[in-house]
Amino acid sequence: MPDPSVWQTIGPFFPTRLAEPSCIDLTELRGKSARGTRITLSGQVLERDRQPMKNAIVEIWQPDSEGLFSHPADPRAASADPNFFGWGRCATDANGWYRFRTIMPGRRADNDAGARLPHINMMLLASGIMRRLTTTVFFGDEQFGSDDPVLATVPNTSRNRLFARRAPELDRVTDEAYRFDIVIQGNEETPFFVD
Image (cartoon, rainbow, N blue to C red; front, side, top):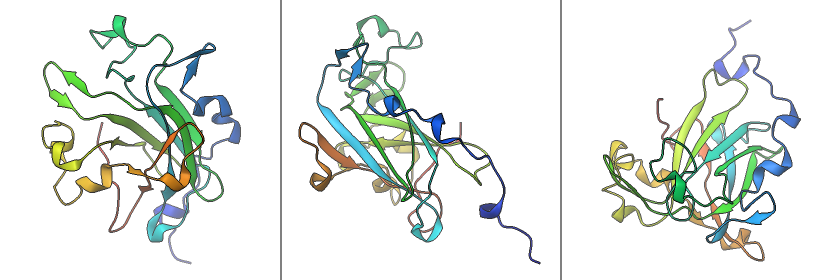
């Protein structure tokens, strides 16, 4: 019998209740609406050969519509939107889909690092993956992203894989929809960052 591949290893297996339905809507906090343009960010988590990865855990964290984090590490945290928590968690469905309802993040001006494009940070945990994978999804035009210090670390040939694309076919009544697929392996692999 051949040795098992990395994709045949056991665990971690996540209980379906690890990602509560309330964690996918970041547009309200304590019954109050966050400021900014509401968007839906969705996509598929895909293994090699573009096979859907079910029951993977996708987490996001992001700045508010003004590019501020409500976190003590952000020196401007006191000005952040008090009705925007900026964190969510979702489990992928049987077809590998995740979906978040959130706010379009604002352009961020970091004092030391320079200007950041609007972005959402993402983390992925799944069976067969021994350590978490982190990436960033950017919004906007790639040609204007060359000054972003994080995007600048990615080879030019891979940068387009970090941009969400408008997906009008997925629009909800009040939201603009964006699609961002996360590809674990292969020619179209999503660039991941080591933390």
